[in-house]
Amino acid sequence: EGTILCNVESKTGDRGTLARASGNYATIIAHNPDTGKTRVRLPSGQKKLIPSVARAMVGVVAGGGRTDKPMLKAGNSYHKYKAKRNSWPRVRGVAMNPVEHP
Image 1: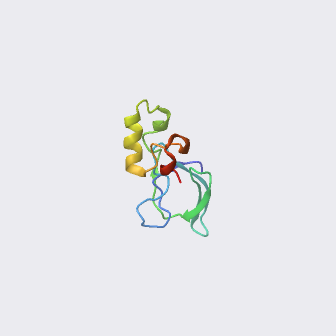
Image 2: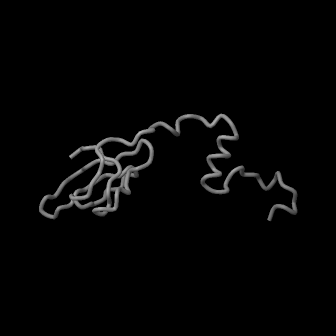
Image 3: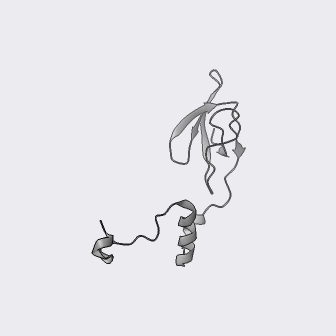
């Protein structure tokens, strides 16, 4: 109990699906040898039962503190959201011409 894990398999053999983002980790809370299940606390705070034979890496994912650094330039935000979705830049309706705002 208390071991810090990352890249945890939710089902045996799925090659790791939980706690994979930068700086994230999961923690073992309890282990039941009778049923072969282990209770794990995920980065969201949710507790999940996983099979005890599921694999995981011991430790924390590298790159923690990545979100603490400010963006500084509009170009950095542009490239960040270009890879994700078309949600940047956000233009207020008041700043648009009346025909362009629903």
